[in-house]
Length: 427
Image 1 (spheres, one colour):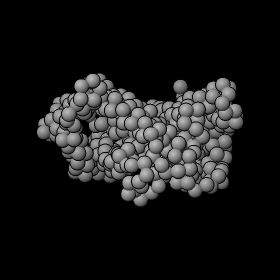
Image 2: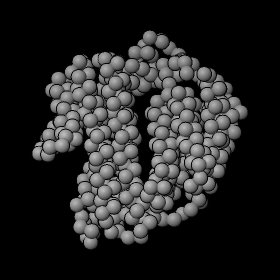
Image 3: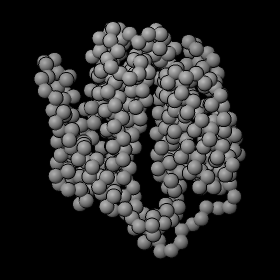
């Protein structure tokens, strides 16, 4: 499929998704409305895939961010449809606002990349950046309980209509002129591209792991576990109300799930030379874990929605059950996560770049997660938490990747060669 055809398909999907969700959301509780909302989610995911295919050779970071952002949006909009029936309107609204936050954050770098590729006029790209930034800000305000209505969402929505029509007319193509081709020695450019790819993958994986450690610690240990242990009449010492704190945990854990996908494929790129098939399997294992984590988070969305609809911060038995369901589903997903770490440890052991002791600690961390997750599923009581000790392997991997990225940064000439090589790749 050519860039022009892919862009025209994406443009048609933009316009169809706009209509499908608008009509579907106006028919709550009806089969036709549910079908249209589900169709919208499929179209949104397809837009992300088409844009990823077109933009990845030249701007892989923006392409991956847009793909994951659109994927999260599609999942959350579909989850909101289910949550409306099972947990009420409050949960559905939280899922919708989280979807808009994901869309806004993933689309800002996407618009900037389109401007750099000259696939959008500068004024239209600027409109998109501003519109999506306002959309994300408005969604964040709604999640915090500040009712701003449709005011901040309107510029982004209008941009998507204009952008969809533009794509339908000419696809992914330069607004003026052609895309510049490579210059200089092709072989040296390819070599520079390889070095830069490895460095960028290490940096992305290291930074992603660092952000995940902070967000997961805040959300799980700082909020979810404290709410689960709190007495129904207590405030548990949280600086926010229970409902707002739980929404904050939802957003943080959704960010962790998105980062899991990005880290999975960054590690695949970094370790591909040690075994491409195994690196691909490891990436899919962690991606599958991220999906399971996202499903688990919907139970927290339901708990937050019940608090919102009830107009109280009381943690009753129903809400505790939702939090327990989150922990149970997440624990199942950790089996995939443990397998991922075992595979990464094996790849790191074979890699010439990674020290053997780092590889060993990563594999031990994977074995710890597997032992704890499988042990929790057996009928007999599981008395220990191995991962509470072995998780240090993840921390070591994170620190080593950041150290590697800091020490091996390519020079600017290599960056330029890498950019030229990516521009030369066929889409």
